[in-house]
Length: 198
Image 1 (spheres, rainbow, N blue to C red):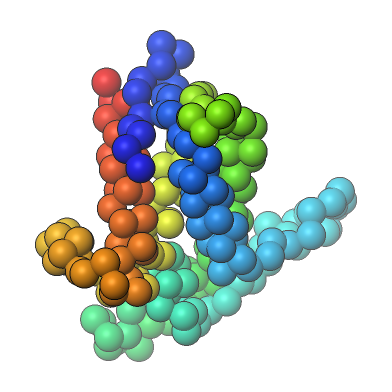
Image 2: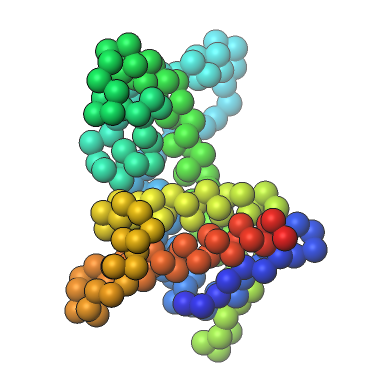
């Protein structure tokens, strides 16, 4: 897994991906979508239904799953950091009005990643070049970030130094494949950012 993003003249970016890399990225994105959960039914809404959907309340409590709690953190530090009742109430209210939209955006980003990967057809065990438009790059950055947060949370990574310690795990450690995916996703994310800035 050595591909890295390069800038394109139109402001987008490209990266070569082989069949294994495509399969890993797609599988991780599908798992992320399953973890985030299904979206609301989309369809034509009229009048009051549209207004109701805008003010649709989401959850007011943080998710119990540590990965979801990392993807959808408390707005004001959470009760462990700020034990003030007013802050907790404000955080719950903020979550109630924002989490559904945030979940929807994260699903859209992961789905954009999957759709882009589904257009690729590596030939003869080689690689295929993924070419992203600028808007697709933003969605890929979001999806790569969410995938790294999810894997990092499962691996209990707390800072960048943990990634180095995890890299030294023996190959027999069951966490090793996820560590390698975590580091590879970080490389993809970093080179995509560099491509967009350059």
